[in-house]
Image (cartoon, rainbow, N blue to C red; front, top):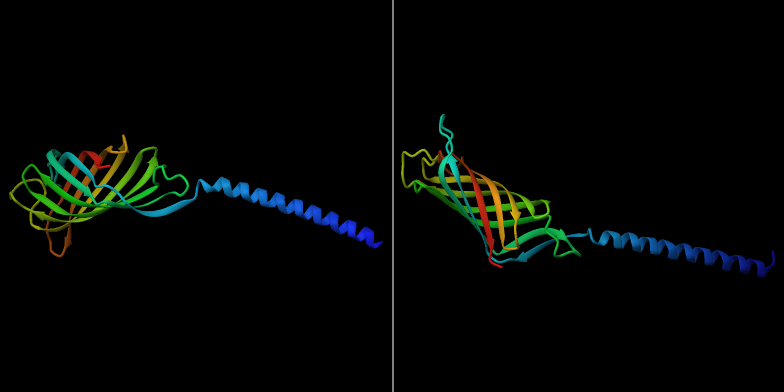
Length: 205
């Protein structure tokens, strides 16, 4: 084979490999661009204060004690949020949100609880979140010998499960189940209460 033929063959092969490389790079670029919108990021962001009020019916777990009015739970969410969302679609709803809240909880008898909780929220659908809040509260018994589940002063666990729907950027509504448990934190408080309620939330945007 002559030198000229060898050079022609090398140039031909180089041209084929260059086209193949360009095609591969173009394919990779298209693939990368298609996944860009799905890239996620964790972010700690400053938020305005957000408040929630839950009104509902309570009961203790004594036999024959049914739900009765009325109980209120107030959550004041601190002005920061840790969340997971779409990196290149910042206006899209966050997949996971984690918030910290001050909790105040009381019944019509005046017995109440005060503490703090941590609330992760998980996106189920458009504007719809599943929420679970776990906290520790100090229970105060103002009126004894009631049937609201408050029997002694002391630290207890405070649980809140909910489904919330964002009506606007500022307002949301929710269905909630709240529970105070005698978890024997530091001392045996002997408190036990279940609540079913409807909540309204407002963000000070």
